[in-house]
Length: 55
Image 1: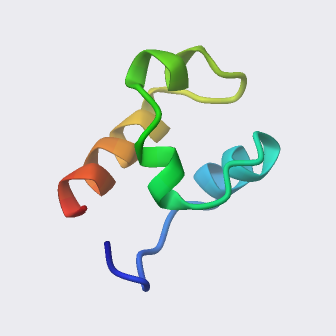
Image 2 (image 1 turned 45 degrees about the horizontal axis):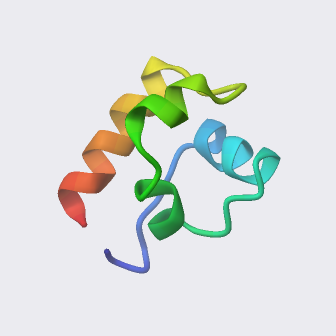
């Protein structure tokens, strides 16, 4: 993954809320787990899926 990858402010806040340290860690979390976490929704799921394609 490129160092200059830009994520939405919404996804950034979600990562901070759940203390997810970086994108690599986020992308390793299973979809079902993410969707069950507070504050995570389908719009962010789409963004995560797109980021996984770049990885």
